[in-house]
Structure formats: structure tokens, C-alpha cells
Amino acid sequence: MFVLESIKKYAMSDRIALVNREETLSFAELDARSDAFAMYLLESLGEDRTEIVIYGHKETDILPCMYGALKAGRGYVPIDITVPVDRVQQIVDDVQPKVIVDFYGIGLRSDGVILSAETLRDRISCFLGCEVPKENWIKGETPAYILFTSGSTGKPKGVPITAANIENLYSGLLPWMTGEGVILNQISYSFDVSVCSVYVGMAQGMTLYTIDKQMIENLGELFEYLERSGLETWVSTPSFAEICVQSAKFNSGLMPKLKRFLFCGEVLTHKLCDQLAERFPEAKVINTYGPTEATVLVTAVEITEKLRHDELQIPIGYPLDEVTFRIVDGEGRDVSPGEQGELLIISKNVGPGYYKRPDLTEKVFFKDRETGKRGYHTGDSCFEKDGLYYYCGRMDNQIKVNGFRVEVEDIENNLVKVDNIARAAVVPVSDGEKVQYLAAFVLLEKADGLSSLKRSMLIKERAAEFLPSYMIPRRITAVEAFPLNTNGKVDKKELAKLIK
Amino acid sequence: MEEKVLAILNDICGADEGELEMDLELFDEGILDSFGVISLFVEIEKQLGVKFEPTEVERSEISTPAKIIAQVKQRM
Image 1: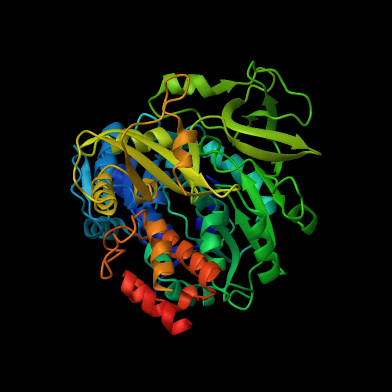
Image 2: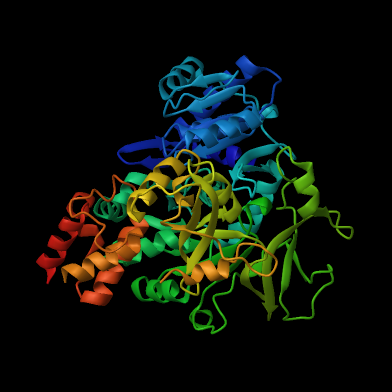
């Protein structure tokens, strides 16, 4: 696989692969440690190719684990610490891994081996110096990673992405982020935008510069790290950049080498583009779009001054080389040029379908008769103008909150697990361009005599056992009854009016 | 000014009027997070004309309603 080849190549130099606070990992160390971990997996698991699970945040040893799994011919399932134990356990039960690396010792139940940060280090030390023959490396249609995303039933849904998918992403994205310098490593590994750094950046010998959760909670510290980063390529969701531009210090003086911003994962607003153009006049802003199911992104476009003033909205871009789009109506017929409809992606980026869910896969994945490639129904409403594509919103209840993909029903189905909540309805609160936060309305089983703040604090605390923090609604309001629409369903438009 | 700050906080935290205790630990209780803080600064600037430089404020300095009010006062 291309990224493993590159790591081997750069291991001959003294280049740095990762900076994580005061720690650094050279390409040579990354190559050696991933080989050692791969050897451990091959020795202890033999022909069993079940994916391994990695639970952690931005620990330095996560990268050797990920590339080690790939060198041992199997995929990995990265799970970030924002995911609560209960949900991690559901994923573990689903995958049945033979090896779990748990950097935080959260007490998972599994028939497989659970390695702590310390035992992982021991295993790596034992095999240091071994080199795994390349014929063991992952290739073709084998999943390289499985990401678990929000599922409407309330259970996380697995999206496997193969080695071939990632190769195709690499060739498509390369023209947009060619370079060697330092690249931002802020997005959690369990979210696919991180693939831009971990695969496309690493394969070109870029240095991944880590920003962790703690730094984001203390912007003073974050900016100290950014200042000494030497960053050339910024990859993030627009939301993270929106936090940063809140400070007047976020400008080319802080990061003089910055060449480009690459955004993915949610709507890019005019406001952010204007702010960045003013603060970083030398840097390009590139917008991209794509669902996890089609390997991170399938479009790109540089937001030039002309596009920045595009009154329609900021476009999501042109399809990457090799990618074909269709926009269809409710009956699956191609719409007339310029009309809105569901976007279908036909590309080698499209993954094999949902993990162990042939029923769901059949609904939205298909084989394109003309090209023989896989296709995917995005559920995104889009239109095309002069070759550029524009995003108009979801056709179902999936939303993006601060860059995270969330199914509204997932939150509702988990809120009712909290004591005394009979029903729950979640409404995204938007400023017109983008979701600002989530509001939940709950119907109590019986009166609790609590003030609204106390109740909301209590519910949030309990909900945190089932939901990642970004899925917990900021505002929770108890109602006497839900307004119903003519179909007898909860009328969310009416509920939204209750928010000032 | 105090009332305005409290009204902004009530709005962000989803609290009723008079419900926020002055020494309530907003981060520990899960009422305020990174995105909430940014909304707080934006609203304070909009409604009171007081600007916060987010890189110069530590969480410990704005962890309760009383501390937030004190920080606003300092900048007026």
C-alpha cells in the first residue's frame, strides 16, 4: 500500500512523521514500531484477519498501531475518547476483535486480548527490529479501517473503507495538497477527515502536527502550539477554524508558512472565507465534500475571490478525477441541468457498504451498469451550475453539528434510555447557513419537581453514558405534550418555534 | 450589565431567569463547552461592546457566572 511504501522510503532520512506536544516520532521510528506491532499481530493471531480496535485520542503510539495493523494485512477500528464506554462496548460486540488497544483502561469486555498503553509498549519492544515481508501488507478490497458513525436506530453503524478506496482518494486529492511540510493533525482518528493527514499527508512525507482536546479547551495553549508549528497545510472542519478566528491573533503572523486551508465535513460559510482571506492573504482556501461511505471526499475547489462572492453559496466543488456524479429526482431519473435532486456518486472511492448490514447496504449502494464501479446514494440534495456543485441540505434527518455527522433519531433513541423520559424530540437550531446547536424537547413520565436547569444538568449527565459529548443537546426543555402535525407525527417546526 | 450577562448565559445554558447560581461551576457541570464559550464571547461583544481575546482567558477565570461578570467588568 502506497502509504506504507512511503513510510519505508522516508525512514531512510531523518524526517519527522509526528509531533505530539513535546514528543516526536521520526519516520524511522514509525516504520520500526509499526513493523514490530505487525509482527506481534501476525505471531499471535496467525491467519485470523479480524480488524483490531484502537480506543484512544491522540497518543503517539496510535499511529504505529494503525500502520502496524495494515502491515499485518488487516484493518483497524479507531474509536475516540469522546465515545462513551457503553457505545464503545457495542462496537466491540459488533466487531469481536481478537486484539484491542485501550489507551485509557475503560474496562471493556472482550474474548480478545486487551492491551494497555504499557503492555502495547512491551509488545512493540519485544518485536523491535523485525520487518514484516510486504506480501503480508493490506491490499485491494480488504478494509483498511472501519469507522462507526451515528445510526438512526441509536446504535453506531460501521463503514468499512478498503485499501483500494484509499489509493483512489490519494490520486484524486494529491493535486490539491501536494507538498512536504507540516500538516495539521487535529481531527480525531475516528472521524474520516483525519485520513487526509494520516494517508495523503504521510505518504508525501509531511509531518503531522498534533492538536489535542486539551489544547482546544485552552486557546492560549493552542495558539502557543500553533505559533511554533511551522504549519503549511491546514486540514479541519470549518467549525474548528471558526473557533480559532474568534481570536484576532489567528492570522499569517501566527502561521507565516501556511499555504492552504483544506476544509471538509460540513458547510463552509461566506463569513469564514472572508475572514480567512483577510487574515491569510497568501493562503489558498480549498473546500471539499464527501460522505464517509465514499472515502472522505469526492470534490474539491479553490475558493477564489470570485467564488467567495458567489451569491448562491460557497460551492462544494468539482468532482475529483475519476469521480462521476448524477443528480436524480424521486423516481431515479436524471434532473434537467441546474435542477435540485439527490446526488449519486459513482467512483472507486465508494466503499463496499455497511459493516454486517446487507439490508442497509442494499438500500443506498449500487453497482453502476455502465462502468462496473460502485455507486452510492448520498441522501444529499445538490445542484450543478457551470460544472460546480452546490449543497442544499439533507433529504433525511442526518445533520452536521460542529462538523460531526449525527442522526437525530440516534439522539432521540438514546435520550429515552434516561430515567423518567418517555419521549424525546431533537431539533437543530440554525442561523440560516449552519447548525449552531441542538435543542431537545422531552416528555417526562411523571413530574420531577426540578427546575429546568437542574433537570437539564441531570439529563445531560445520564445521557453522557450513552452518547458522545457532541451529540448531547445544549438545551433540554421539558414539555407537557408534543405538538403533532396532520400525519400524527411530532411537529418539529412547531417545537423549533419554542426556541427564542 | 450583570442582568445582561446573566440573560446571555441563561440563553446559552438553557436556564430560566434567576436559576443560575452565581458560583455554579459551568464547565464541571457540563453546562458550558468550547463552542458555548465562543457563543458567550460573541454575544457579550454584540450586546455589551466588551471584547474578549479568547487566547487570553483561561477556563478557570470564567468557570462561574460570578467570574464571568467580574471579567466583563474588568474590560469595561
